[in-house]
Each structure stands twice: as C-alpha cells, then as structure tokens.
Length: 493
Image (tube, rainbow, N blue to C red; front, side):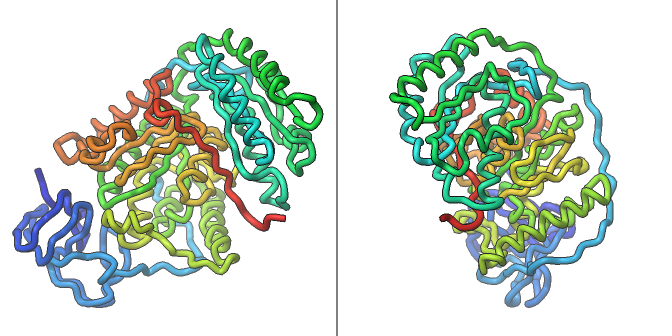
C-alpha cells in the first residue's frame, strides 16, 4: 500500500494515507522525501522547500500561502499555511468546454406519480406549517406507525421552528420548502398540519404547491376542529388506504435526481469519496439524470473551475451571482466569509477553505453545469446543477430534497448519523471509518487506496444507488433518522 499520494504532478504537498512517523523516507511518484515530523492520516507533507509567501499547490491549484519557510518533509497545516481568499470578486468567463459522455439509462423500480418524477419511497409525511403544532405532528406519527406496511413504506413527522414571526424572503423560503415537500415524489401521502393563526398557514402555502395530486394531500387546521388527533388520524387513514394501491414499476434512471453533499470531511475526502461521487455524477448525468451540488461557502476557492464548466455565459453569470451573493450574505451580518474549515475538518487534515473547496467540488465530476438554482427552486435541467444553500449538513441536505432530489449522496471522513427527509447514503473516505461505524456508513470509498479504481468504485456506487432507489434502505432509514432543517435568514419577530 502506498503511504503518500501526490494528487497532481504540480503539487508541492502530498497527503498521508495512514499515520506516518518522523524519520521515514518515503516515495511519491518519481520522488522521495524524508519526514521531519509525524504526519497524521489525511494531513499534508511538503515535498520540497517552500518559501514564506509562496503559494502552496494541492489538486493542481493554490490552497493558500506559506506563513513561514517550510522545509521538505515538514508537516503543512494551520501553523504554517493560511488562506489567500478575500471578499466578492470580478470573474471572466473562460469556458473549458467539458464533454458529456452519453449512456443508455439504467433502470430502478420506483413509484410513478401523476405529475413529475417517480418516487423511490412511498412514505406518508406529516408537515407542520408552524412550530406550534410540532408535538401534534409527532403524536400523529407515533400513532400512525400501525399503518406502516402493505404499500406504506413509513410514516414520518418533520417538525421545525418556523412558519410564523418571519418576514420577506425568509417567510417565502419557509413556504417554498413546505410546498416542495408536500409535493415531493417520495411522499405517497402528505398531511399538511396547520394551527390556524400563523403567517405561513395552509392558505398561504397552497399557492406555492402549483398543480398537485389532491388524492395524495390532506389539510388540517387544528384550531378549527375539536380534536386534532382524531381528525388527523382519520385523514392519515384515508391517505394510507390510497397509498396501498401503489406499486413499484421499472423506471428509467434519467428520472433520478441525486443530491451531492459532504460533511465531517478529512484530508482523504477529496482523494477517495468525493471523486467516487464525481464518477457517479458523470454516469447519471450521461444517462439523462440530474445531480445537484450545493454548499456554496465550500465552493469558495474552487468556484472558477465550476464557472469554466458552465454550458453558456448566462449560467456563468448566475454562478457568479451565486458565489458573490453568498459572500454578501456573510458580510451583511458582519461575519467573516472564510470562517471555515471546521475543527473536525482541521483535525482530519484540511487546512484552508481552498483546500476544502477543491476537495468538495470533486463531487461534481467533470460534466458541464446545466443549471443554477436559487434556494427552494426545483431542478428543471437534466445534468449537473448548482444550488444556493449553506454548508450546514442538515440545512443543505434538506435544500437538496426541496429542489427535487429523491436521495442524497453524503461523503464523510469523520462520520455522521443524520438523515434528511430522503434517503441519505453515507460514503466514507477511509476504510477504518467504514469498519468502525458500520451502523452509519453505507459505502466504503477508502477501498480506492487498496487497489480499486475510481471507475470501479463509481460504477459500484451507481449499482448501489439503483438498489436504494428500488427500495433497499440506507443506514439512516434503518436507524430511523429523518430530519428537516430550513435555512433561516433575517429577523425573527
């Protein structure tokens, strides 16, 4: 097994593939280096002397500059490297003209819907319009567990603290999120549960739902009935009876929308897990399906790569706004734009936001960017899409589901148990994590370091996704973990 990997031939650093001890002489590609310090797994070692102020190259791009002279063999991290990023920038469109390799669509067994894409689950969702009825929604979900089976894949409540005391775009976003989930293809039945005096009540949310299958949605305003539990259960039973008529049928993979997300990343995420997802993304979009890349703050430092892959100048301009508007969002609250990576990222070997971003964007593969989406906007264009949402795991994963993703691919080097409203497949960057947290991890991309190729892993991941789309449960589903997190912006009244 190799102990160091130099990602591109221009890199000034290599990454440790396992914990390494000072004094060892190791080879990388055509060169050798003697370690001057212990190097933890996922961390960087200098391959030659790097002068103070010199850009440090990884992934073929600068990930910051040296804050002091760094000798060959030294550990390169937060003590001697800092970001080069700054505020909003001007960009020029330099298209790289990426090519999309077309493929015949594979298939999965899904649930056809009257409008839109098929569902990969036939679940019954209880959506409170306001936090005041969260406990009612959860009580209904507990009571309705007896209805699971025979066509009802699960019953879930999605509590949240919003729906009232909001203004402007913040309030509109909550309405968009709830409307999108109420019409999501994975929901074979939905109870939209209101209180009756909230700002974003049922009457305010309905216009955001567009045309929907009214046989699959029920509405309940708690203040208008004597017993909301009994009334709610009666409506839930109606929905369950309707759902028992549903059957899985073969559906082409060009009807799949898959969200791409990472969290708890380490220094191997951009080498193993994220490139594996990138191969998958190219495979699915080549079949006519769609993928969505989000976490805009974690594009900072790699945004020009995505901009160059935009199919046309209009998409390039939308991507520029996507990036600069998110920087403006930080600055409007007088917060630092580059307060990233997280402590866990740093412990795993990620030093600067450029380091993190260049690894993060590996999930997008090499295909052209076909769409750029505002928060709460639905996917329309087949292919790779960029979505405006923050890096927070639960908020970003929920945003992907809201934009139409039937499932999420979530890479991690540190591990995390959560799940969003749709199946959330966890892909480990290293085999020790996959072995240590079998109850969290679905797919081990660390096998790349043991001889598997990216092509093999990407094709295996495609097969696994089709299995999950066809009914195989992801670990978050086995564990019963389903969460909703809405992106909060602006004041609370």
